[in-house]
Structures are given as C-alpha cells and as structure tokens.
Length: 235
Image (cartoon, rainbow, N blue to C red):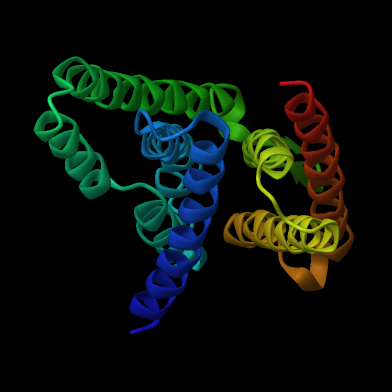
C-alpha cells in the first residue's frame, strides 16, 4: 500500500511538471510540430537512464518507496507515449506525412539515445570505488552526489528556458523556483542519508559525517542549479 501511495504522489507531480514543460516548449516553439511531447520524452528518457543506475542498481532497501515514487511515479507521469502516438496520428490525418515520419524517428531515436547516454553517465559515476570513497572512520558517496548535481543542473536549464517564455507573474515565478529547489534539495539529501544508513553509518555514531554529507549535497546542488539557471538564460 505504501508503494501505491508514493507512486500516486510521484505520478501526480510528474504529470504537473510535464504539463508545465510541454506547455512552455509549445509557447516557445509553437504547435506546428509536437516539440513539447518530444522534449518531455527525451528529458525523461535521459533521467530514467541516469537514475536507474543511481537508484535501482545500488539496491538501497531503505529507499524502495523512494525509487518507486521517482522512477515509476514521477518519470512515468512526466513522459507520455500516448500523447506522442495521438499527435503522430493527427499529423498523418492532416496529410503532414513528413512531419509524422520525423516525429516518429526523432521520438524513438532520440529517446533511445537519451536512455543510453543516461545509463553511461550513471555507470561512469560508479566506475571508481563503487561510487563511494572510504577512509578509516567515514565515507564520501560522490557518485550519488554527482548524480544529484547533474539533475539539478538540468532542472536549472529547463526552468530558466521555460520561465523566460511562459507568461507567469514575477511573484509566481519566484515561488515556483523556491518550491522546486526546496523539494529537490530535500529529496536528494534524503536519498544520500538513506544511502549512508544502508552502508552501516548509523546516526548515533556518524552523525557529523551524515550531516556534513547532507549539507555538502545541498550546497553542490544549489551551485549546479544556479549554473543551470545561468546557462538557460543564455539559450
């Protein structure tokens, strides 16, 4: 039952984010071609490839619901094969056969490429020392922190591009950014803590280490989020 609840919550969040991203892309590039659906499917494909390595294959049992919420719920709600299919049929019915063929080729090819690149990125993070540097009385889970930072960078780029092109009041933009950053920092920090707990670093004996890694993850993600926003503003 817990898994069903977190999947439902993740799916609801993913659907809302998909609507915002696809709507923003359509306002930016127009509706002459299904750019919005293509964008969410490619972004979601890369993220599921990256996070499959960072979340599933590391087998952190404490975070079973956490993984289900992100991979099944959020990314399942964020990506949409049904919209791609419907938009392709509409293009065919309108006689735009070349656009339909391009949409099929781009959606299938780009999504497969994005998943592959995400998997490569995730696997490369864990290439050295299984993703964690150990010393006598502590450890540094660099792989998960770098994965979190990469996602933060992508969030920053997408958010900057969309917020510049979607007609939203300034106060709502600020509120969205604060909420988005707060939720991401909380969830990414929580997973880092769960990862350390799973590897035998108890709160009673390694509190300073856990708090330090949690804070470091937050600072790193904030830095990459800011860099992503700066990069997105220049696109």
